[in-house]
Image (tube, rainbow, N blue to C red):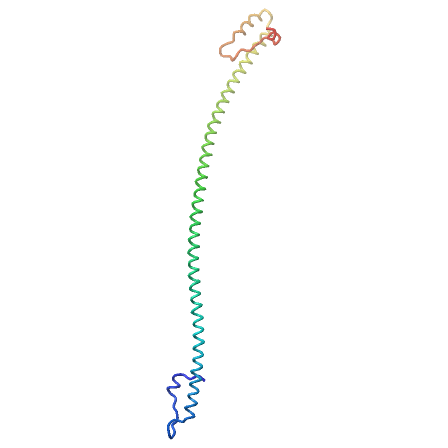
Length: 182
């Protein structure tokens, strides 16, 4: 049975001829002693629990401090990684832009060169066509001369040896056997 401080204050002991009843007093004192002993044991247990809880709290606070420090370090590291990645990405983009500009510049230069080549080829084609027309014209005259009677051949032959100025280079109309001998 637990005795509270109120129980002690309100306890009324019977009086006898010479004071309080001895057995009741002894009994009450035993109850108080048991209660105080029980409370002392409980107090010790509570103090031990409280000490353990204080130690646990201190460990948790140390862990919280360590965790907070780790989180701050991690956040700093992540921020550095982000900045580094952003710098790398910017560098890659700039390099790609420069490379694209270089490729575009080379392509433009190649386009100009190709246009010049095409223009040159067109000029060469026009020259070749003019020469071909001239050659065909010469062959056509030669065929006409060959088809004429013999007396007109001599006068036409003289005309062929002096080609007009607008025609291309002169063709050698001698047969191959005459050229080798000459």
